[in-house]
Length: 348
Image 1 (tube, rainbow, N blue to C red):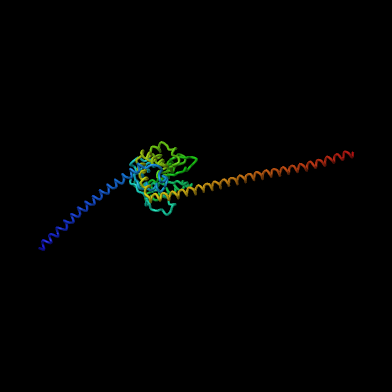
Image 2 (cartoon, rainbow, N blue to C red; image 1 turned 90 degrees about the vertical axis):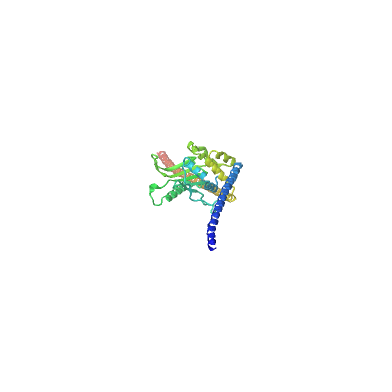
């Protein structure tokens, strides 16, 4: 009896365990399958909503929080933008990693935080992309600093020649050099005389959203003009029209719609927009104040020049008065001499 019980127990435990494993795996598989189906259904619902969206966009497409959010959420969109900016064919940008992600919807206490996107790809190449709408009149210096900082990060005591390239791209809503406007400018270290490139590992680019009309054939070849039009779009109809011509832009547009429907993200975007509007107003006021100061300084300089001219004229008049006084003295002396001669003649 004891052996039978022992035998029964020994058989029953693995048998039940086996049944539990099968049922557990089966349940897990069903859950995974249901999860995938739910995800597909959810995606289909959002895509249909995006296709039916109409009217003005809720959040400005130049909102830097929205910019970072949609590129962080959709790797296809990010890959497409990087490929366009670096003039790379499809499939050449791989192994993307965002080095400074944010928690979407989480409150950013410090509104002055820079919402740039620092990305490594292709096993070490680094690109920093920043959307800047407020002209703080320091972009050249700022972009050089960012590029140098990233270049320094890539070198950690190894061999200099093995350091990967660095790209600093600014997407700006103002013209950097008004005397020589360019839609998409790329800068490298070059020899001033023969234009020979010093190194291809240090690169700075500036995309001017206000100069889409200056896009070159090369810019259009890589759809950089379409990306710029996306950032300047005002309605969903306009966005879909742009997105139909580029899959990556289509992914970007869909993701923008989806995350802009998230209340927490929308609140952060709106808070950021208010901050940026205040920054714009403050910079506009500061520029006006500086312009007024320059005008006043110029007016003072002109007044000073006029004062100098008047002083010179006064000196000239004083000199003429002296000359006239000397002539008067000479005439008086001559009169005396003439009178003396007359007197002598009369006496004779």
